[in-house]
Length: 298
Length: 322
Image 1 (cartoon, rainbow over the protein chains, first blue to last red):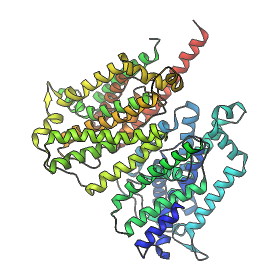
Image 2 (image 1 turned 90 degrees about the vertical axis):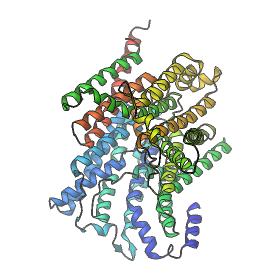
Image 3 (image 1 turned 135 degrees about the vertical axis):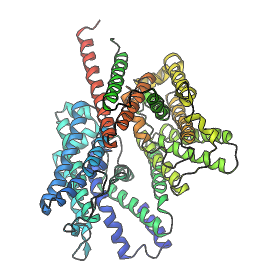
């Protein structure tokens, strides 16, 4: 609903907004965030949070860059990105479940470490001029529709099936609603947590593949904002930070909301510096509306 | 030694010495008298922010203030901007602190009145404040602060920076006394330990937390004055990274993320440890990446150690119920 209003505002202010080219651009820019948000939604439903996804994305991307530089073929590169992401995510999950460190503290710590790894591998210099053999995943078209759409669609259908149609998904929701109770009825809480964080890591690794495919370089400050954006999108989409509640479709709407705001502001001639202000204010408004809603119900 | 909090302080003290020894081993320049002044130069800003974060966490909820660094940036810009418009600098500072308190009050309103989870509420205001700081200045710093103002953070008294004497130490003592020997302090601990029990025994839990978020904004305003004096300019990114670093310091100092446990002394020691590590690695010319890694490891390691110690104490308590 809000999304439609937003689009209408931008469309009335700029004739370029509704052009096919611009919408494709928005879509392309949204792919990495959308992929990560699918994982973030699952982790938030689980009652956790991961502020280190930017670090995971960065490390995976830099490893992908290095793999390319060593002349590795595409499938190896993808494998490197995915397995690096999944491994780092599994580290997060292991720390959180085995040592009972609160997720925000644990992932805060691992974020510092991942960024350090990034600096050490990249050595302060951009990796650029990477081959474009994978660019079709983001930039290409298939049957008249941009391929990013298929990627997002596939990821979200997969995540939805996993969350809503498998016992594993039910376990995730159960843990998010009441971890103690879930433990008592025999749900393997620790294992499920590690799997969920590893899945988020895997998706962050995939986002890194897409990022490198799109930009064909790896910068030093890659992934700095994506964790906060992903959390913001998930919450905008109706997830409850306390766990148990969340919606994949909502999160996807949240992603589009953020990306359309960024794009639209530029088109109507507002400096891109204002975009964080707008996203922040929107987030505050959504939170207030949410709070009033909850109060009315109770 | 049975008290886990005292144990924690000893643990931190040991860590501080270890960090000092590490610094001395890494760099021949570390053990000079001038290093102390240089090191303490970095302490007060992070220190007061860490203390503010500790207070917000202590009162439970769970409480956290991610907007603290952005508030600091925004207040710094406001002061420099007001000064540029002809307001006397000291008056501008005063107004700045009030603005800080108001920005904190926005968080307080969201968290305490509307009951939005603190993590989300302050994440949103973090976006809004830091975005505003960048957008209002187009990313460039505001200069023109007179040289005499620099005395606050650049001057030395007995080899120790002036703002250690005038801001950091008094605030640490004040907050320590407030927590350990006043009614407000015991109410904060009570609210953090068991919200419901505290409420039933007459503690106005949410009013207390409201005040602490405002205090956090106020302290961020004071930190802004110190950075302003230090850099002689207001940078829109002055507080960048401070939100996470202040959480790190509070948690390393023993504050429990869900409230009820923690001490100002722990936070003070944690700030000294983090700064010693940073300066030591910096003097030894070791890449900034290792500084980040060291802080990350320290953060996770300290919580793990804390949990392990707590577990053992609880096990001991079970075995000997007297």
